[in-house]
Length: 126
Image (cartoon, rainbow, N blue to C red):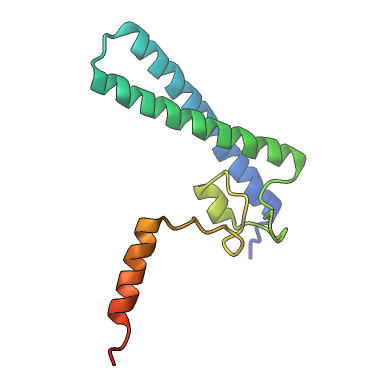
C-alpha cells in the first residue's frame, strides 16, 4: 500500500504552480508583444486587456501561494487552522479557507428578491 503524505501532495502542487506561473508569464509577454506590434480594433484590444488582467490576477494568486509554501503556511485554513483539501488548492491556489469556513458571498438585493419570491411561491397557502 502506498501512502501519500500532505507534504508530498504540496510538493506536487508546488511543481504545478511553478509551471502555471511560467505559462502565465509567457502569456503576458506574448500579449504585450502582440498589442505593440499589431494594429488592433477595439474588440481585439478589449479581449487582450481582459486576458492580461486575468493573467496578472493568476500570477498574483500563484506568487502568493508559492510564498506561503516557502513559509510553511500554505494550505492552512485562516478560519479553523485545519488543512484545506488538496483538491480545493489545486482548483484555486489562492484558497485561504476550507469549505466549511469559506465566507459566503453576499446576496445582492436582486437575488434576495428572487429568493423571497420563490420562497413565497413555495409557502403553503391557507
